[in-house]
Structure formats: C-alpha cells, structure tokens
Length: 338
Image (spheres, helix red, strand yellow):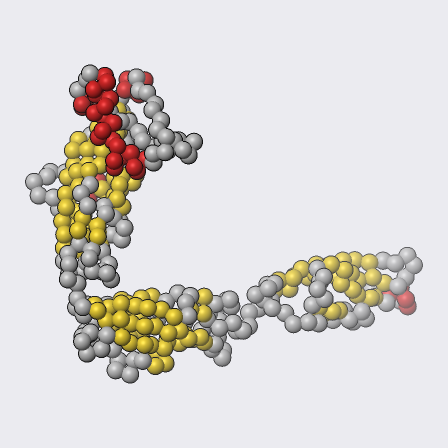
C-alpha cells in the first residue's frame, strides 16, 4: 500500500474456500501455510479467496483467488483385485500358456503407480511359472498332474513410488488331465426379415456349445464353407469368446451356410449354421397383424412355439405354409405379454 501510517498497514485473511481449516495466513505478512494434514485422495485442489485490507478510514480492500493443487505422495499401496486366486492348467498346454491376469488398483497417481513390478515370494522354487510385468501369470514348463497337481504361489506387486509400496496375493494353481472330450455344438438356424432388401446389420443369434471337460475354455471361429461362392468373412462375424453371430449391413436376400468351428484347444468341432434372409415388402407390412401372447418370452416363442404357431395360422387361413411370414418377434411393453 502506497499510503503511510495506518492507511498503509495491510492485514490479510482467508474469507472463502477453507471451511475445514487446512490453511492459515499470517495476518501481517500474508504468508500462506498449511495448518492441517492434506490428503490428495480426499481433495486434490483448493481455491481460496484471500482478502487484503488497510487500516485507513474508510477501509480499502481487495480480494484475490489462490488455486492450490495438491501433488501426490506415495501413501497408498497397489492392491490386487482379489486376496487370493485359483487358476487351472491342463497337462497338454504349451509353455507360455496364460493361466490368469492380475488386475491392480492404486489410489495414488502416476508416477507413484505405473509401471507395476511383479515378483514371486514363494512357491516357484522350481521355476515352473513366470510373471510378465503386465500382470500375466504363465507356465514355464509342461506339467504332470500325477507328479504334482497343486501349487501355491505367493505373489507381490510393487508400485513405482519412492520408496515403493507393495501388497501380496496367493494363487492356487491346479494341474488337471488334458482335455478328454470334444465340444458339442447345438444346431442353429437363423431367419432374417429384411425390409425392402435394406438390412442394416446387427446381432442375429448366438452359437451355443458345451464341453464335458469341466475346465475347458471354448473358442469360436468362422471357417471356409465348401462349395459356396460368397465371401463368408465379409458378410458375417462371430465373437470368439461367446459365439455371438453378427451380420454386416446390406446383407442380400438368400440362403447362407456358415461353417462354425469350436475348439477347446485340443479338439475341433464343426457345424453348419443356416441363415435365411427373406424380403419384407411394404405391402406385407400394410397387410400384417399384431398378435400378443401372455407369459411367453421372445426366446421361448422362437425355440418352442414358432413352428406350431405357423402351422396353426396356415390351417386357419387355408394357405400355404410359406405364405405365413413372421415379420418380427419382440417383447411387449406389458411385461406379461409377448
């Protein structure tokens, strides 16, 4: 303050932004300091309004906003998503087979988190396993369940702070016999109604497969179909994990045969899925009717009632079976009805 005497004497105070009393300001010098412990994980920044006023008459004052960013201290250890895990490996799996992948969380921020470092604390004295630094536990040998069928591993993860913090988890790895049974695919036929031959694409069904081997993981794929001229992989896709079938946009009307392969890593099973795409004209929509069923889900209707319903309509209308077209099956807004 360029004034003299009391007119030039300035006092400072915090008037907003510090309801919990984390900061203090020297009334005479204006030095701002920390009054209580700060925790970035609770509050990462503060905006304080500081008032400076002189002692003159009338009192003159001015406010200023101070933004305080709290930097991170490495005060939280990395944590596994589970305190213990169970993994299964079959005897015939190759070296490098992925048993499981760890998920790590850390309440701190970079650089006190990533990259994490993993280490065996016990259980891997024979070097039968290896840990990737992306958190994947892999095999480092081939196993024989008759020699040893269970391993208990203690695994530690370190964060990137200074000093690094850590936490531990335990993994039970079970060694089982190689796969004994091939997958079994449930037959599937898909009917698609394409309005004016302008199909927009989308999920059309799901291939279901089972395996009598308890721990087998099944993988789905599209294989070339013998004797066809259309490019299957350019028209359809299948999710390799759950078998969901998707048709790409602008699928032409006609009959398609998809060669589906399911493998458990040892056995391969093939099945043909038939996809029938039929055109729906504007005239068909104009002359269609809506029928509602009580306590029947769309899935139940398609699987158990569709064929019987079509035959019943044919008999009632005295028409050909192919003249009965189900344009759409969908749930009603009334949950008790289809």
